Length: 149
Image (tube, rainbow, N blue to C red; front, side, top):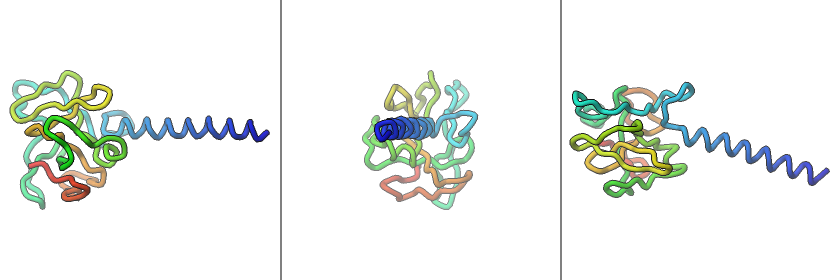
């Protein structure tokens, strides 16, 4: 009985962990369940950047097409993200769609499992999960993150 209970507990724990990690892994991806942090479509010749400039309480910053603030991480290096795991849950990467192309000061950074993330001047950019609506900028100077300018 104890052995069956322990086996059942392990299986249920593994299933719960899988569900949580699957949700965390998809955080920032466009789906029917989470539309807050969409993947940006491939840039066309008429599209100058995957983001736009917007004036906020923190000055003029980069935001996505919905007006959500973008941030850079002080621990990143040019061309590489150091925000993984729990960091990427709180700071979802600004993901690029399959086939997206770099343009001007906007480039692409490879992430785990081959996904791509937008970078401005080589610095990967992120969202902050506590920015709940367009124009809100609550992540500046939090955990080494700063608004993208």
